[in-house]
Length: 307
Image (tube, rainbow, N blue to C red; front, top):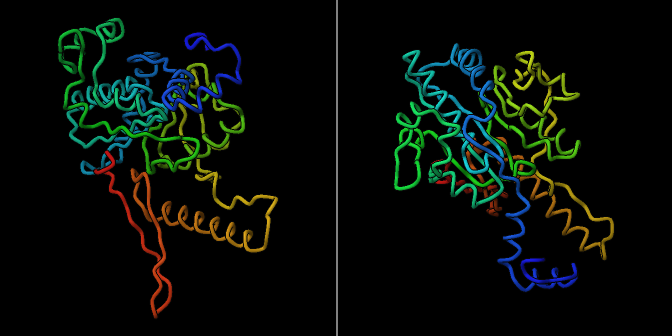
């Protein structure tokens, strides 16, 4: 409001309605992009000492390591994990495919993450050895090497609504849920439990804890920011729109239309979650009537195309 020299909220609302670009600027300013390479270094030490060893112990050489970083911001966390895992694989002489998914609600953040371009100030967090091995200098910036970028897939996603990836070895959601209310945090913890393999791990930030969800996760170490998945039933919902009925309906016809729309959304959600592979961001379902009855047709967008 100060930048636009607007004195009242009412006038600013009017300005937002007439200037869509300003609404996007406001949205970007509300996001908190506090991140850096190898944040909380002790976490990466534990990954190398314990976590990577466990997830690779029963994995075939054709089965990829699958990691998800929701709320990845501009990608530093994703690339830090990718570099740490690459160092571990090279040290143990293991050749295995790697897939690391970075998602964020901001398209601007995703675009920056995909480029892998970072300013020179990363030298305070990245060692000279890693700069030489995993980056190359371009003018006044450093760019992640293509060999690392090829293992990282970035996509826009709202983790509070959109379906998660599945069959994951690791989920790293660090210093994100500290901004969420308890109800939303409860939903996300259940979603993460659902998305992980039975031997999977959840990584939180040093200021976060699993709280009352001890039936879903157990701390891996005394520091308590890395958790192993427990055997338990995950209670998850991936759509806030499914089976949502408005209390006031003008007519019976309107009520019927609302129910049909809700049922269509629920059918879409169930079929998508059950049959569409991880990485698919959307699926379109429509009905085709024939003499033999009604058929459901599914149009999928492949993970490769989304990437």
